[in-house]
Length: 396
Image 1: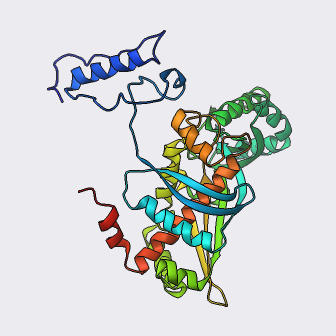
Image 2 (image 1 turned 180 degrees about the horizontal axis):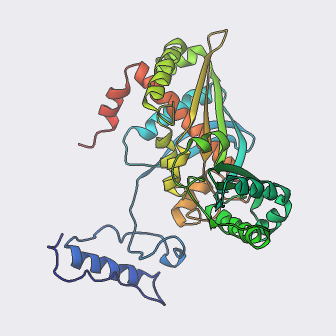
Image 3 (image 1 turned 120 degrees about the vertical axis):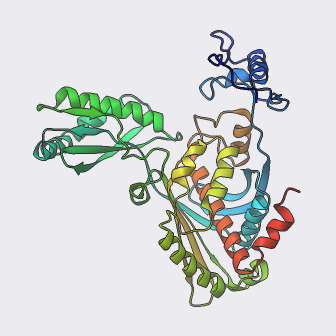
């Protein structure tokens, strides 16, 4: 890094007519090298055509290359994801892909993972302020009476998004309206912002009494951060992955009988409760993040998507029932980074590039999470956790 200059720092080069070109990206790398003293020898090695990046990045200068490996095959018996899948995982954490593959082997030999998308909603939550609580209550009743017209205004902005319902949350003289949309194959945050704005413009133009203040978002939708509300009510897809594992497979493959893993589950439940954790599982975020990077998802959505619940039972015959529930899995197979070259290839490997494939992708993600939690939990119980990281996870 160069010493701090006395004057203002120069602006990063931009061009109005050729901003997304190899030449312009090279110009920016050279600029950063001059200004910081760091040679960017690797950022400029990429296969992505720069002209395809408009809408995905500004000041394009190169790529951050994250290694991708494949875990699997993983057998899924879903409503949308059916069959065996090789799962792309982009990570720099050694042992991760091997651990997920181990869980996939176990679940495949047990007959596969059952997956179900049980809810679907993306939100924007505008806030309206009034002179007092009674005025806010009257407004809420008026919104209920005029829902269909508000829906028409919101849905007019998109051919894909559909307003499902509007929840209401009052506090003092304030009232939040939580607009819930379905969004097709898109994650939908931008889509629902535009649609909610249109609905609220109709409300402001037609509500017959004074509204003191309005703001399109005031943190109740909790975009890009976890909330207990979204764990209860869903943000994105609410997905369950579940399996019943024969006792002999647990012992043979995981070196861990069901009774031992179930006992560890109770300890982990208590630890998560004491810590105030948003997840009583092992490491949802590992599998979700690795798949998000590989498949062009908005990685910041891991903040919401990694919250979740695990549940287990010992069956009367000694087999082990295990499930994961992801209440706020925000995924897309259209829009955002899903169309970029390497990301689209990874989605194609999963068969998730066709129209209507977002729930299939959600089920594959949930099944992957289940495999990872089974593998890590078993490794802890069998005292193989540290040794496996020593063998595969240390970059010496």
